[in-house]
Length: 130
Image 1: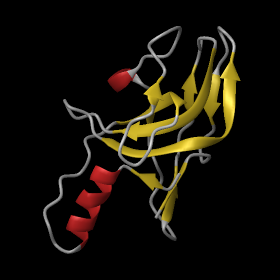
Image 2 (image 1 turned 60 degrees about the horizontal axis):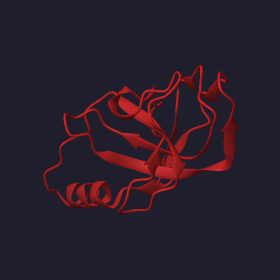
Image 3 (image 1 turned 180 degrees about the vertical axis):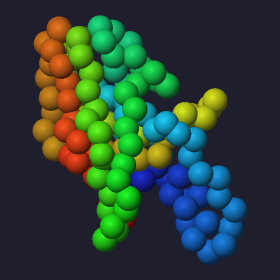
């Protein structure tokens, strides 16, 4: 996943030349989207249903240290008891009282779940790159 939210990208650029920067508030959540967003607009997040809780209740994700310009998740993102749906993209958000979208991107292939299925992104399979 190499798509930074445009606002977050601007914050990083400012920080890279000595400007002020406030780090995202952890934990970072992984929101599941039924429609893919863009640099400037959010995707359509799956509504709370079955075992999925939307918004700040979305599954949490952590990452190993960055190396070579990228970093990979070090925990599986798992949602049990999924509703019947098709997930097309994911977005990473911080946990601020007004959450900030950090990263976004389409899945390599859309994933359709039936009611009661488990959706998993394996540890190490979610990568961020600059």
